Image 1 (cartoon, rainbow, N blue to C red):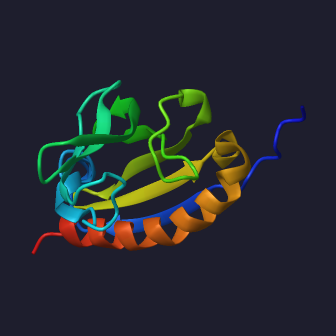
Image 2 (cartoon, rainbow, N blue to C red):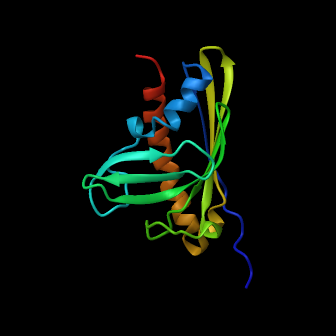
Image 3 (cartoon, rainbow, N blue to C red):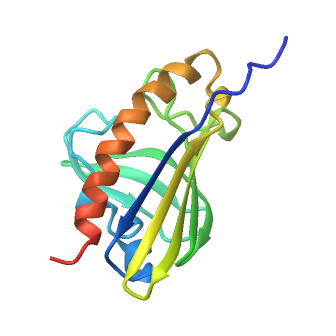
Length: 158
């Protein structure tokens, strides 16, 4: 069986008017502040989105009745500069526990000034999802653009 050809990554870059540590904190521990409630895969409405703050930590949703539904796993936790997360949601929009089937996203937080941070986002390795890789890539491209705009609004001071 021939491996699937590489699928181009999704890339976004944005600037937040906030120190690098704050930008990292809002993206990670503050995930619930900016993640859309309708972007969930659990069977019940989402109560909160959670990223456990460590390598090996889970990224998951908690439903209104307490049920947890995993989305992925933190692969690299390097505050305040870098984060890599395994995206373990397959083409059926369900959690796939096999990391070999997971794409991943990396977020880099680059200090431009003490109060301004460039956030470089890349979601890659979609071919690991098999035949669903291209459709997942196309779906998350628009989704991430909207989510990152919401993140930027949450990270920028009021």
